[in-house]
Image (cartoon, rainbow, N blue to C red):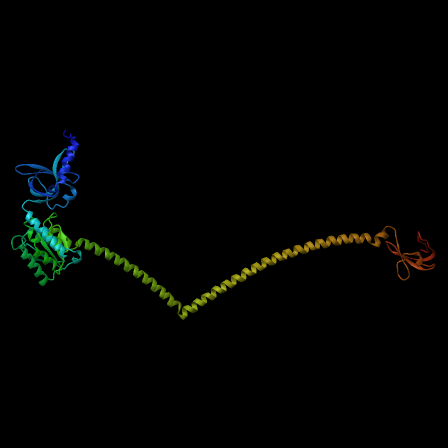
Length: 433
């Protein structure tokens, strides 16, 4: 019994058979583009057809970016790619890797061979590239003297940087002898001109029209030039061998003119900005130097005898003022201290007087209480003998002795008539009072 496939399995089987065949992995197809459409994703979809058939094709975005020409319906091309199928629909189609216009295939192969040869020799190495001068004085244009390209370059150079001198070195840019004309002229410019930079190129055209700039003789003339060379051939998609060898590649001749010289408007802005910075720096420098000069002048003035004497005189006056103020302050403080101390002394004396007065009063009171006169005032009297000694014992008296009686008020004389001696009581009788 035969195997039964599902549609998906069958489509997958067809895809595997096509991709497993090495013949279909890298094929060249000649045909005409139709049903061309560029998707928003960047992929290109088309149909390649001839008189007897057609096949769908797709060119993915990454491969399409390498194209140097625009695809359009009706264009005859030679395509390179692989054959496979799309399992969703079972459609067999070409997955393209490269495209070239039909008729240019031989030239394209020659271009690739020369490109590979010169690359191996090192003519494309970045280490051989020379730096372009920022403000060239002389610019040599190696190009056709009658094309629109030379007029555009002269106009742009004059507008952007009129200080540069422009030399036009006419050459053939198309035809059988064009490559030799370009190479020889590049050599003459290096021998006889004082140019700072060379621009060589032409306007756009087909691969055949631009072929002079793909010749080996031109590539080596550019490589051997002592003067930096800008290659300006065709339009943006056009790439030539001269572009790889030149010190700088420009997408168009007009772009080369803009790259060769600075813009005078930008230079004016740069100069104005530099002038402003210089003016500001100069003003700041003058201000700093003026301050420094003032400082030096003051230092010098301070070292003159007159300034020294004036300064010392001022110091003396300041010291005198400070001394007077210090004396006044000290006197005021001394007076204040003296006043405080005096007040304290007066207060202390007053307190001492009060204490003494109190003590005196107390002592006087006690003394008064102990005074014989107070005793006498109560009716007592004091008896003294002839020797003026107080008689306190009747045994010290004899009959006939004279005694003196002292009263609270006055005294009296008496004579002892009788002496009575008693332990319990001593009593002297008074007579002749």
